[in-house]
Image 1 (cartoon, rainbow, N blue to C red):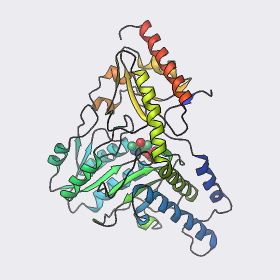
Image 2: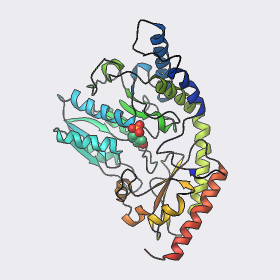
Image 3: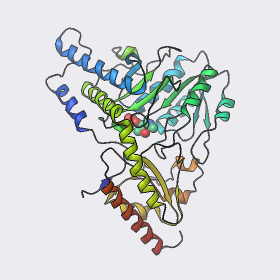
Image 4: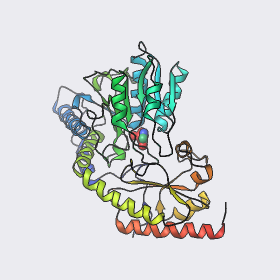
Length: 387
Ligand SMILES: *Cc1c(COP(=O)(O)O)cnc(C)c1O
């Protein structure tokens, strides 16, 4: 077996070879600028982008015109939040979000607070879910946006998105969801869920890095955004800049493959995830973080009490690539703010692991990981009975 085994698909996924194949011609023979209107190079590029727009739209139940291509979900989150904040300044300045959002949302909200925005950060329960009554109670006449992620990147917990959408609609407030971890993994439907704005990213769904999209609803209501990037007026003026044609073509193909394989992939991955989780839970003092019911099919976040977090990572990382419950974004060893928000103690957060399974993960790999994790945990516990 080739080592290390990659179980960090929530950080990024490999490009599907079928996606790569679709991208390649747009680097060489078909290198045109999609904004060139006067020759076939431009027309071909534009055709590729239009096709990809249809493919991405179809995956989430949107219209092609409602898809704005970006450089990824970080840019999309910035565009959705800042774009609404500026455009709807006449209506209000209040945004409701939640403490377990991705930093691309939280840090953007912090930025808006400096510009006079008021932000409510809803807490979550120990399953990682927001409380709908608390959400409704937080809405004021000045509320312009509810920003709640679809599924959490650390725990896989899926928020009650349809109920949030219904509440937002009832109170005439826009609903934005960062669906980067959900799109391509579980059925997402912007109509069913009353979603007004949504972000996603190609590299989390077997497409290339550096491409993403924002869904911007065009009717009931027609959502408007203030552009954050001014220039040539690309993407209906909402995001200027020459389009990444190969990346977008690949994103489209990735979306198409996800749509076709969604059910089968989800079933296969949840079987592998359950096999892994059930085996690891045989260890004493081992706990699953986040909801086990409302959860992405391929994610398991597990804490192993009485082991040292660094020791755990060092014991595993030559053979298994995964993320720990200590801050993955920086060199500091702060426990994860997401796990903290769920009420997980610091020491347990430090000794937690996020397993995220992918399209190419095999049963053989999972069995290897099970044996390895059990042996490392048992070894650490034997060395140091209490930490
Ligand atoms: C990965 C991720 C992002 C950032 O996406 P990029 O395309 O890498 O900028 C944002 N939100 C969530 C929930 C993510 O998992």
